[in-house]
Image (cartoon, rainbow, N blue to C red; front, side):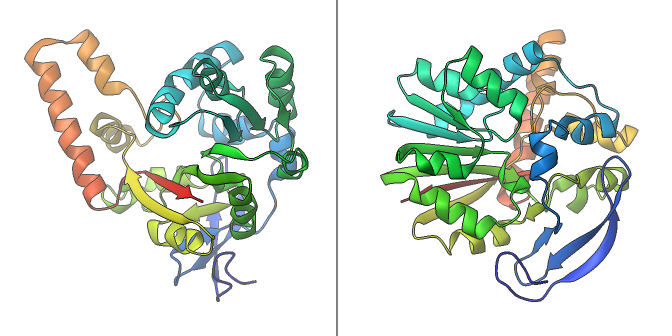
Length: 301
C-alpha cells in the first residue's frame, strides 16, 4: 500500500484507538501524514460515530436538541469568517443541518450532504433543506456552489485527493471551499506529551490525519489556489485539565471549548481578565508555531 496523498512508501505500526480497538496505522514520512486503510462509510451511515467518538471515551452523547443548540453556536464564527457572498451553499457532513439553517437565514440557498441516514432525514424533513447521502448524489443535481464547507469531515475521507478534486469541481468560478480538520501535531502531543491524550487521539472512523505539510501537499494537487493555517480551539484551561486528570471533558464544541468564558461568567473582574489575557497569548504562541489543534484551509477556484 502507498500513501493516499503522494503514492509514496509508507510504514505501518499497531495502535490502540479510542474505545480500545487495535488497528494498523500507516504513515508517510514525506507527507507527514497518517491514515487507516479501512473504509468507515458504512459505520458512519449507520449512526455509529458518536458511540466510538464519545461513548468510547467515557463522554455522554448529547440529545438532538442540545446538539443542535451547540452546533448553531459553533457555526456562527465559521459563517462570519467564510460565508462571504450568499448564493448556493453546500455543507458536506452537515449533521443536523444547523449551519445550513443559519446560512439560509443570511440569504443563502442551502444544500447538504450527510452519510448518517438519521441526520440526513431530519435535515430534509424538519428543516426542508435538500440533503444528499453522497457526493455522487450531489453531483447529479448539476449545481455549482459559491461556498462549500467541510468542517470536521476530511478526516473521515479515505481517498482525499480524488474526493477534493470532485468537490472543487462543484465550485463556481471564484467560489471557495472551506476545510477544517484536526492537526496531527496537536499541542497535547507535541508540547504536553500527554500519553492519555495519545490513546484518545485516534478514532476508528477518522481514517486520515493531516499535518500542515500533508494538507498543503494535498491541496497543491488541486486546480485551485489554497491557503492553510492552524487555529487553537482549546483553551489553556482545557490543556491543564488534561495534564491534571489525564481525561477528556465535555465541552459542547467540536475541537474547542468555552471554559474561559465560563470562568469569566463565574469569577468576573480582574481575575477573569487575567485568565482571558493569558489564554489568548497561549493560543497565539501555539498558532505562531503551527501547533494549533485545528487546520483551516480555504481553497478558491
